[in-house]
Each structure stands twice: as structure tokens, then as C-alpha cells.
Amino acid sequence: MLSHMRIMAVFAHPDDEIGCAGTLAKHAARGDEVMLVWTTLGELASQFGDASHEEVTRIRRQHGAWVADKIGAQYHFFDMGDSRMTGGRDEALQLAKLYASFRPNAVITWSDDHPHPDHRMTAKIAFDAVTLARIPKIVNEQGGGQAMPPAPDLSGDDAVESGEDVRRLSAWRDPVRFYQYFAPASPYPEVFVGIDDTLETAAAIASYYRDFYKWQWTDELFREGRAGAGRLAGVKYAERFNLRASHLRARDYLD
Image 1 (tube, rainbow, N blue to C red):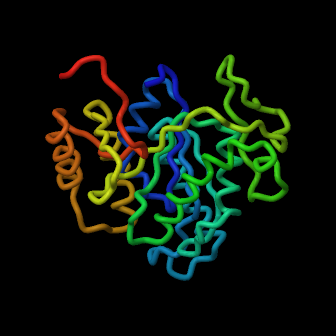
Image 2: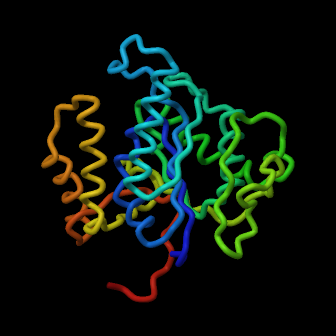
């Protein structure tokens, strides 16, 4: 693992990030750069009733800002349309431009087989954008969605920095480790991240959304889910992913 990383979590709707909140908070606490990205505003949630798109946008941005602050992350919303995502090139290009700006070393997203089409399409464009971001003529095409925040100044990194013109982007060609929420049918190796130190942050974020949505589950159930993953991995609490790679990296010794 790199000693200093930039990690981007790409999901479809605010609350999708619950499955990796402990991992993101752990990296942020280590000093890594973390960015939360949502491809839609989740505007079709029944809790909003007949509220206007502008009102939904305001509330959803509040959710994103609160969660990002709790984690210690930056955040960015796209507006690709709740339950309207296609997984097409234009959506992937919008995300590729953000990759070229933020320059992630690792991406976390949904599994490929989730029943919700937005989740599957988000995973698809998150993966497609890795390749699109590598090609200068593609990331500098006209169009591709909303303006992007400037890349952080990471001291010695050659990314564009705050105040510079981000319309011209340098391709991001470094390897990107691509993590997805665990799926039993996935052909890719499993990775567990111990979150003993950040469980309380993850639980607070889960409770924040539970209270908004009036979900019928308890804090104890959330903790038990993380404890179950921890028992598989030999820690107290863990989050579970698949790494989109044929094999895990070699370790120095058996354990």
C-alpha cells in the first residue's frame, strides 16, 4: 500500500457509501486524500414526496457535506438522473475528467451484479473511466458534464492545483486499484479492511441515514454486520471488498 494515497469512492446515491465509510475514515485519519463522488442526487427517494428538484438538490448536498465532513473527505455530486443512468460513454467521460483532476490511486464502488441499475451502471462507468482518463485527447474533449473542483496541492504531485485552468487536463496513467463491494459471485479476490478505530464514525453515518429514511434496523444490527466480516478476517470489525484483479499481491511471509 502506498504511504500516501488518493482514494475516490464512486457511488450512485447518497447513503451508498455506508459500506465503506469506516475504510474511508481510516484512510483520511492517516492523512490520505479522500473524495466521495455521487453520480446522482438520489432525487426519487419517496421521503422527498413532491419536493422540487432544487429542494432535493439542497437536501442531498447537505447529506453529502455532512458525511464528507464526518469522514474528512472532499465530495462531488454529478446529476446523471436517479434511476436514469445508462452506463454510456458520456457518463464515463464526466467521471474520467474528475479522475484526471483528482488522480486517484484507488477507487471504491458498487459490485457489478447489484439489482439496482444505477448501482451497476455506476460500477461500469467507474471502471470505464479508468481507461478514458489515460488518454489525453479523451479527457480534454468538449463536454463531459459539470465543472470539476481543482485537484488538491499534494506537494510534488504534478496535478493541476487550485486556481489553475482545469479545462486542460493531464491524462492520469498511474495504476488504479479498483475495489468493489463484496459480491459472493464475484470472480475477484476478497480484501478485508479492519475498521476497529473508525467503527464509531461508520456507525454514526449509518445512523444519520437511518434516521432520515426511517429504516427499520438498529445500530446493533449494523455493528453485527461489521463484526461478522471481522470474524472472517481475524479482527474485531471489518469492511469487505473485492479487488478487480486476477490475484492479490505477493506478501513477504505467510501468516
